[in-house]
Length: 138
Length: 387
Image (cartoon, rainbow over all chains, first blue to last red; front, side, top):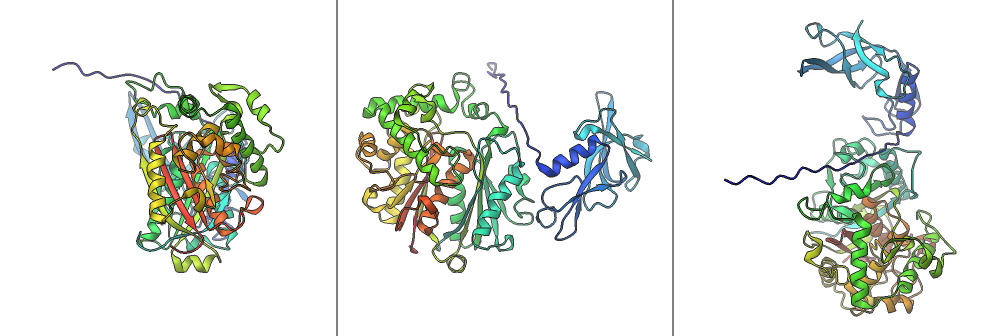
C-alpha cells in the first residue's frame, strides 16, 4: 500500500466579541470583585452572569443586581491530564435561578454536590471571567 | 407546494460597519422586535424558527444556540442553515416550505452577520479545496474580479456602465433608513476614481462589509390574512447549485448557470413568460456592480451581452420599466448572513406597499434572489394576491 497524502495546513481565524451592556456589567463587576446578575421584569427569574434576555421567558432583562459572592456546587467533573488535576463545576450563586460554569479548586475527594463555595479572586482586577481564579470551599 | 404561504412582517436593524453597542444576540433581537412590532405580533404566535448566517465568520459554533433566548426559540423547533451568501434567501425559502407543508402555521426566519467581529476573508478561504484552490485563492473580492473580467470580455460592458450601477445603488440607499452606505452625491467619475481593489473592481464597485440582522414572519393563509391587510404571497421558490471548482465553469459570471436555472424555474412556476414586462420590481443579490449587469442577462431581463445597455437606458432605475434594487441593494448593505433575506424582505415590503420612500407604485409581482459565492442561487417570486 502506498503512503496516504495528508496536507497539513493552518488557517488563522481571529475574532472580536462585543459584549453588550449586560455582559459588560458582569465583567466590570468582576474587576471590582463583585458578581453581577440580572432579574427578569416579567417572570422575576434571576440570572447569573447578567444577560440581556431572560433564559426562561426571553423578555428583555431589567436592571442588573449585585449578588452575594457565595454559591453551592450543583455538579462537577474532575480530570487529570498530563499530571495536572482540574475540576470544573456548575455553581449556583446564592439567590440565582441559573448556575454558572467555572473552575473549582478543591481536593477531589472532598467534592460534594451541595457544598458551599466562594470565589478566590485573582490578584489582577481584570474585566474577564478569570478575575475569579476559581471557586473554593468555605 | 402544499398550501399557500405568505410573508406578513419584516424587520431590519439599521445596518452599519460596526455595532459596538450590542452583542450578536442583542443585534438579532433588535431585528426580531422590529419585525414582530411592525404588525403587533408576539413571540407566542411563532411556531418555529429558521436561523441562517455564515459559517466561521465570527468564529461561532452553534450560532442558533446563541440566539435561542434572544429570539424566544427555547422549546420550539429551531433550524439552522449555513449555506454561504445565499443563506438568507434559503431561510425565506425554508420558512415558506415549512408553512406550505402544513407542519407549522407561523415561522420566523432570521439572517444576521456581525462582519466586524471576524476575519471574513480567512473564513471564505476555507471554501477552497486544500489540495488545489485554498492556498492560491484570494478571498471574495479576487473571485469577483475574475468573474468580472470574463464578463467584460464576453459582453463588452464598460467601467462606466458598471459605475452607473454603483451610483444607482448608493443614491437609492438614501431612501432606505436601514441601508449602510448612503451617498446622495456619488458620481460615475467618483466611482471610476476610487481605489482599485482587484481589477477590474474598484472600491465603489464592491459591496460593503456590514453588521446587521433581518427577520421575516411567514404564515399560512388564514393566519396571514389576520396578521396584515396585504400579505406578500410566496408564488414560487427555487434553489440551484453549481460545481465546486472555480475553473469548472469559467464563464460563471457572464452566464451564471445556477441563476439561469433557478430563475427559469420560478418564472415557469409563476407563469411568467417575459420577466422584464411582468415583474414590477426585482431585489437581486449583486455582490459587485458588474455582477448586477451580468445578472440582468442571466435573469433574462435582456438578451446576452445587453446588460450594460439596460443601465444606460434607465430600464432598471426606480422610474424605469423594471426597477432593480430600489433598497440600495447589496452594494449598499451587506451583513452577509442577512443579505439574501433582506432581498426577500425588501421584495415583500414592495408587495405589501410598506417600502416607504423607496416604494415602487403598484407592485403586484416581485423577484428576489440570493447568491452564494457564484455556486448557489435561490430565487423567489412574491405576489400581491394568493397564487
